[in-house]
Length: 77
Image 1 (cartoon, rainbow, N blue to C red):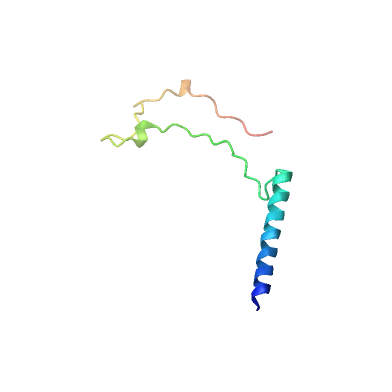
Image 2 (image 1 turned 60 degrees about the vertical axis):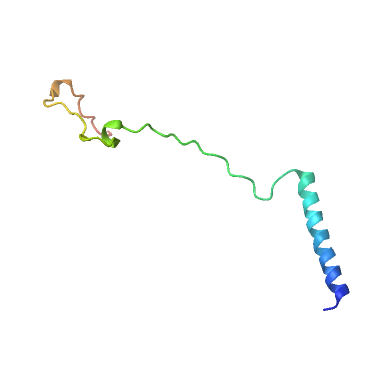
């Protein structure tokens, strides 16, 4: 490959890159648009189950009144 050919190919590559950059600057759009952020809900941690203390078990009542419990849902009809 001759020196003139290398210089010509280099200038041709620079010209193509500048042309593409100019087109993208004029249109104002990206080739690969950025992804849109999705909403993420971060729930607060339950300190009874995640704390590094001696008793990490939840404090449950010793008795349970079934009259206070809601009735079981009937399935789909």
